[in-house]
Amino acid sequence: MGLLDRYIAWKLLKGWVLVWLVMTSIFTLLGFVEELERTTESYQIVDAVRFLLYTLPQRSMDLAPVIALLGSLLALAGLNKNSELIAMRAAGVSVSRFLRSIVIPTLILVAALYAVSEFIAAPLFQQAETEKTLVRSGKANLLKGKGLWSNSGYRFFNVRTLKHSHVPTSIFLYEFTPDGNLQHFAFARRAELTDSRRWDLLDVHQKTLDGNQLKSRHLPNLEMGPFWSREELPVLPLSTTGMTPTGLYEYSDYLKSTDQLSERIEQIFWQKVALPITTGAMVFLAVPIGANVGTTRSSGFGRNLAIGAGVGILFYLLSQLIQTAASMAEIHPAVAVFLPVVLVLSVAGGLINRMR
Figure 1 (cartoon, one colour):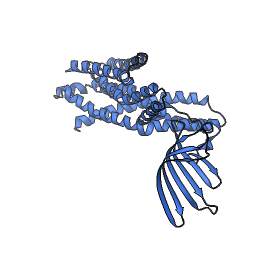
Figure 2 (tube, rainbow, N blue to C red):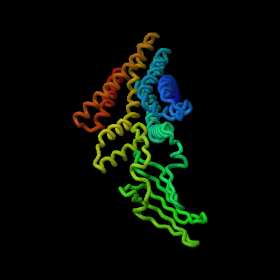
Figure 3 (cartoon, one colour):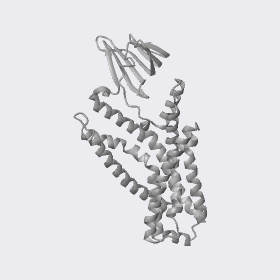
Figure 4 (cartoon, helix red, strand yellow):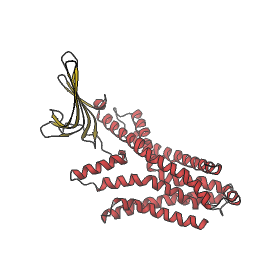
């Protein structure tokens, strides 16, 4: 990156961070007030604050397109107000060269949003929802010790996670001798529950200590039990907001394989896939609005921000309208989700072309 690229990237970053701080502060305060109304003897203020902190990345993701739009407008309008854009044009910086300086930080932002959505925002949101449900129900000790535990005699059974809220995965089985030595160990990727409280463990790795020799074997399935029945398993929240894009894709396949409706999950999956791209599109839409070289008055600065806020609201309403219409017309969710993005990019491209 050249000096110009770094300078513009820094201005954009400062704009994004400033708008992020303002917007997340407002929505976090509103969320805190709402959570205060839900506090009980078991769910106290400390728990509410922890919940808000854990869900902050996901709220930031939801606001990302608007943050990128307003932050970019703030940065570019600031450059315009200080006549820096005029100086760049006078120095021979073409619109294409200026756009290249915008593209680099935008691509980094899009890639970062994908990473945050997959590895940070959704997992933390799901953890927050789970802990909140358990704390409010008075069963916070249910998941202590990494998962659900049960024992029968010298046999201990551990389910680490409940995928899709009710599918047991990462299952460990320990069996000890009366003198406390581990005799048998088994690990299963997941399990299918039967009506007789017996579980069909799938993809099982089993180890047995026979004298002084450790024997290992792999089994495609192994029926064991009795364990929890379907009704006895704790009901944990299944929030689609707290599911990663890959988790949504897998859940959609799971619903299809069990002949359940999957259209809503598919739509949410494509929304999460499209969100970083939408954010990038908003940055490019901000370029012709915020970098209008003919505007140097201070009134133009506030006007551009007002236009940006209006565009953000209009885009949200348009997206909801298109997705609702597409759902009624049984159009593929990907088409409904990406159509507004294509429209934004088309409008941005047309406006940028007029700048040349």
